[in-house]
Amino acid sequence: MEEIKSLLKKLSDAHGISGYEDDIREIIKAELEDYVDEIKVDKLGNVICIRNGSEFKEMIAAHMDEIGFMVKFIDEKGYIRFTPIGGWFSQIALGQRVILHGSRGKVYGVIGCKPPHLMKNDERKKAIEFKDMFIDVGAGSRKEVLEMGIEVGTPITIDRELVDLGGGKVTGKALDDRVGIAVMIKALKETKSDATIYAVGTVQEEVGLKGARVSAFAIEPDVAIAVDVCVATDFPGAESAHMDIKLGKGPAITVVDAGGRGLIASKNVLKWLRETAEKHGIPYQLEVAEGGTTDATAIHLTKAGIPTGVLSVPARYIHSPVEVVDLEDVKNCSLLVAKALERAEKYF
Image (cartoon, rainbow, N blue to C red; front, side, top):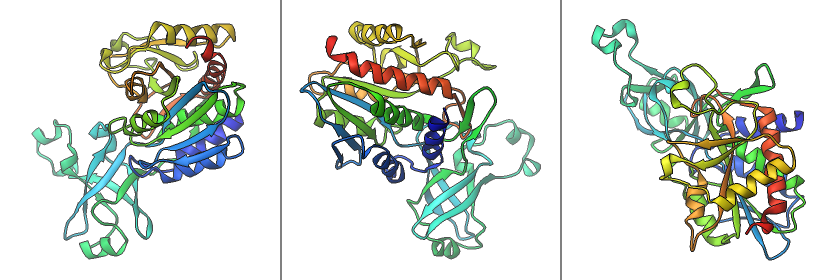
């Protein structure tokens, strides 16, 4: 378990919003270079790690990008206005410490707003919008900010590191989807599949499933698995979702996501993943979700259609800097992916 946690920490602590996944791509290369025959990076930035085998082609996809922000305006007093990149609930961002990845290196800042002491009563009752927030990097003027190497278009990430919680759980930023990357890496190292495997770290999933779309088009696999996280519903306030996804109960196999607007897994895909889990005694859960989707939505609609399944690690507080997962689920998800790759050709 320490090996999984160490890998996950390395990935979670790395930084890369959509379109700026360079550091995560380098970690994947370093982890898999001794386990594959070829590593290449496509024109959009996806990293594709290929292990040669039979003519049957299997694809594993996990996205490298995390949600973050980008500089959109710097005022004359040196305060920075920003825009969200990916899906944020604005109140989670307020008060966070951030890193601006400028041309001269990292610059630390904090997200602030008008303090409640200066707000009118009706203002205190309203949710604070991004347009009313700013980043303070300690500068006294726009010129000082520019001299720090920050300009319009500078990417911004949350300043947070992975740490242990009790009960074998960890918390950190970007576990959506660095968990999926960790699962993909571990599964590829351990699977005994005879097929040709394409392990793909995809770009820009959080802003439209873009990397999965182009990489699947180029590879045209016979079957694919997207590895991601899903919303756990085992904490206060989640009961209204009428779902039963718990940490520590195994990876979730997606039946439907986004209320059917995303992926509706085929019966054959579900049979493949469920029978594999049952054959190897791997605990699993079933997910029918109304909101959110994954790279699988883009992959399964590529060319003439690609049989695609989703295996997810349950996570609490998704799209926040304090996402929580259970390391046992990460281990079991890795095992299920590895074993599913070994059995896929029997089903497709």
